[in-house]
View 1 (cartoon, rainbow, N blue to C red):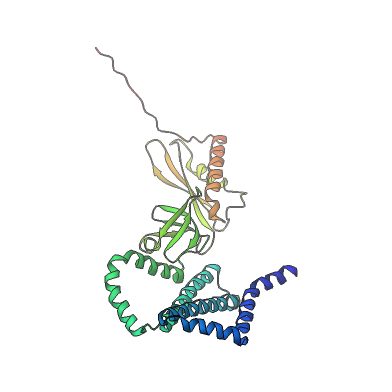
View 2 (tube, rainbow, N blue to C red):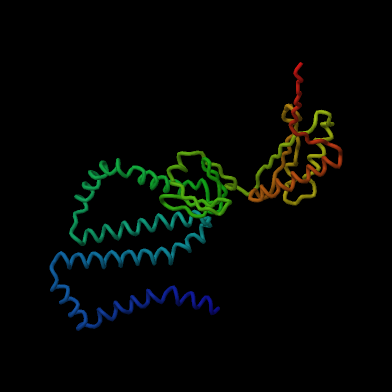
Amino acid sequence: MLKSFYSFIRRFSLPTIVVLFLIYCFSDKALWTDFHGYLRSLQVPIRRALLAIMIFLAISYVLHWLRDAFLWRLFKHVHLNKTTENSANTVLGYISILVAGLIALSVLGVNLKSLGLLVSALSVGLGFGLQHIVNNFISGILILFERPFRIGDWIVVNDKEGIVRKINIRSTELETFDKALIIIPNADIISGELTNWTLTDSQGRLTISVGVGYDSDLEKVLQLAVTATKDDERILTDPPASAIVTSFDDSSIGIQLRCYIKDVMQRSVIKSDLMMRLQKIFNENGIEIPFPQRVVQVLKDK
């Protein structure tokens, strides 16, 4: 109860102070007269600039407060995921700044129609110099709306692999399994090949390849390989695990064990445990895991 009350006070104390201060300023005629006289004493461009700055800050603050006050209620009713909420917050933040900036420019005396023509003219020249920045910006918007990955997903982008920690409008932060942080431009993600291991669910397939000797009983080998997955709660029983013969190599016959695991984030650990279990089962049943051998023949000079 006390925590909720403290959170309420902390959230609404600053807006309350601002509103009370404005009421006091407008109710005190002497203070308002002094402030108005101070503004009139300034030159017109300076006066307009101060007014534009004040309006920009006021509108930005009001829009930001409205977003924080009511947007979370909307998200609660429509049941959006965390990534979509972050995307909507980011887009609305940029829209708020844009609206406040346009109104401030209008108060400053800038003709918005002329500004639009100027922006159109400059966009052609700036497009060549800022094409990479604009490309990343647009790619970031596409990622925010298409959602090919979410925060916390395990993705592979070209040769980079890790967990998504933050999705920005220009780049995406990826944490590798070595705890290194990689900043990937959004344009590279959109144009490159993306693999998402956890987009729909956390399940995934695990494959282990091993070679056995040519004198091995292959039917027994396949049965023993499947047995290695039994009694492991991390491995799914539906679909069941399977083992197949994949190749005839120089010194061994290739066997592949396939199974599905509940949490693909534990893929490396489960694979290590299965490989140790396979070696133990094969050794107990006399199944050889051969290694390449070379015969060196030394010829004596006659």
